[in-house]
Length: 264
Image 1 (cartoon, rainbow, N blue to C red):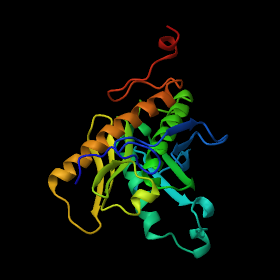
Image 2: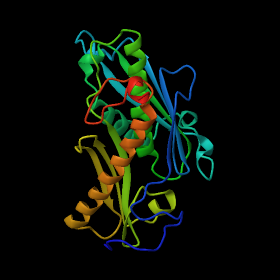
Image 3: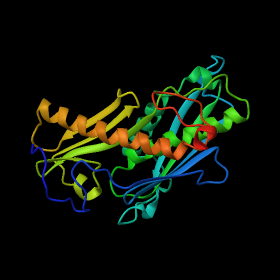
């Protein structure tokens, strides 16, 4: 694995540079929390819905639930991807991505503080250029923050359920070079492809890593994880900026400024 290269990537970035990331909050009118998240050419709409009920296995336990659904719109890709509903079943890839989004969100939400409620997060990819699952996680977290802020304003929370920040990115080895935040062109030819989800205090939620042909060594893994951590810290900063005007209570290591702070 090469430590780095001065040659620019296909989109002009350095090997350790994220794609341009934009989070447009409250993008939808009716959802309690929503965001359009754009990472380069990948675009995902994330909408959080609060329901005053829980799955049957949680009824009467005084605890809540957070779950997610994920889909690719037919023309989010270069060729039309048929809707899974039209095929009569949800594919294995979709199931996997839904599970990782839901698991990741549940790691940073106190379910007892949520009460017997479910937060559904719908992640719809409207344009795909690699990293759709990690982009969806980044947007889903912001959407959940906004939904919880909505519940707090309505007096529906026992306490503040968010425990920490959450973000995800991809890393990989492309032509011997460790790279951060792969676009589709890079992902499709990567020798090593990895998705990393982390909390704001640096703990891992999920690490999905695969060698396509040649196995990789532990020093290579350590280098990729360090690259992912540096990228995720930057994503946390951008999530923080997107949420700064919504009067959220402090949580994790990165407390949001209040309106009074902003006016100083």
